[in-house]
Image (cartoon, rainbow, N blue to C red; front, side, top):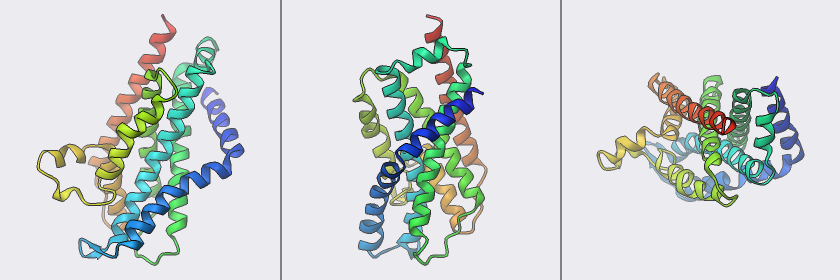
Length: 243
């Protein structure tokens, strides 16, 4: 019941700010597509660069959508509205509250990714996006929602949320196999980048888009990220309740 309550809150917020959320979701990816995809006519791996770029933009949108929705929302609720304190004294199980926040943020990221798919659908490509692509987008959103949830717990001011975006999300947006391949990166650095969640999501979505098998290891890595940050969130919130 607690999960449904949190998701209902997210739905009310989404319905209230639908136009703002949709427009903000579209702006950055559209700029990247226009500048890198349409403005710079080039190829990647013998294919039009757009074939490489679109799956990366989709993966990136699920990351930024889910992270931004969770980090900012929770920072405001915890620091200013003191909503987290109210949840702790309520009969709502705290683990349900966490799951609801993660799923709600992931759905926002999935929506952002679907908006990009809709916007790029008029472009004639042979790229394939199916149910498995949506599953990867949803899983990637859950990972970054859980990361955002943990970081929002440690935020001391509302301005910390944009800082996390600058320090974590922006570098991953450009490095994690979204705009260019990591194959040309120096050895060692390339391996570290490839283990980041966005790299795995980009690789899997791009593999499906090119009618290839995404591989099992990507699901394992994303699942481990989700498990680790989910546990950290649960430990933090229960520890704070027992203070």
